[in-house]
Length: 154
Image (tube, rainbow, N blue to C red; front, top):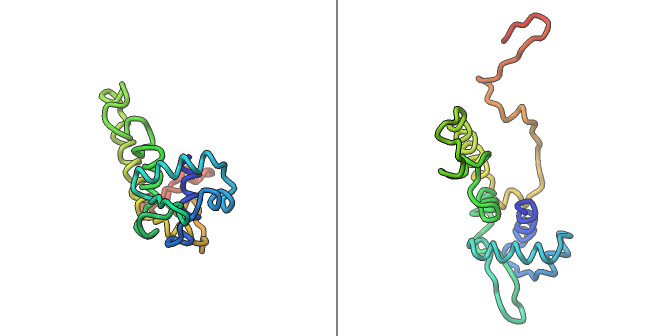
């Protein structure tokens, strides 16, 4: 549902001042009416979308798209972000006190959250200018290349 939610909000972000009906959003996105309705209700509760009543009623963003992060969108739909159950919140995993990788998952989840907080709904609604590979995300100083022929590292 977070994918659908992002599609709904990026569609709305293209015309952030305009009030849009569920039917318009469905028409623009191709998503099912029940899903769009459910997502909009969730976004209203989370303060990301406003509902306006009346003849010209509908839905619009509660804040400018540049002030809404992808982390907020995902959190609104899925709850606290975490790569594992234990990294989403304390006490969710019965093994957390004995787990040897618990702190590593917390670190990974924190890095992921920080990245998602840096990408705004405004950026998500704009065309992609450049692309990057997963290798671009790795810090250069930590990259280790193994040579299969000699077993050396560089």
